Length: 186
Image (cartoon, rainbow, N blue to C red; front, side, top):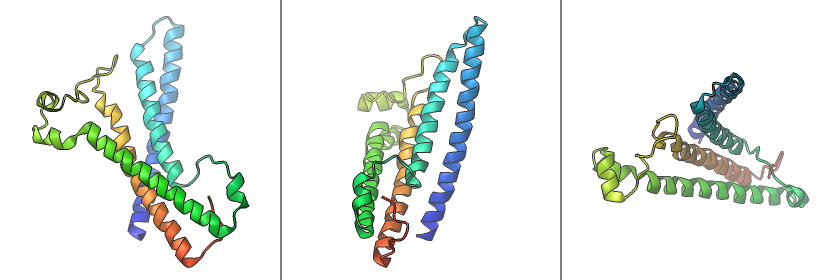
């Protein structure tokens, strides 16, 4: 478990670093957009790139927030529970996050269908003919980038969230087994 916790911690730090870089990029892109429009020379791809940077930034930061159990919550009922009840409710919450991450990963595997893509020798046209799935063909409007590169945020976050949720769940189980109710969070 210590190895998984270290991996989760390292991954969360990397995710926050990437999210911070994307936040800086987003700020620069918006500033560039404002200046270029004020000068009457709008750069249209800036809007699209800013949106995609914001999407990746949001997913990366969300994974870290869930790992740290810092999500927004209404704790009215949780605060009324005794400490063991809060731990059990936290365990249920961790299980739901793990279930969500697992289902998200399953849906991403079905959507991206990497096994069929591999079977087709990474030939996207053959993949499309076989599956009628055009995920690898669609391009962005102004950047000309294949959209699946943007959509890779979902399976990436599903994997990281699965790891973070698993570590959180194991830590909560250890807390229950040790009957350690100090500093219990919901």
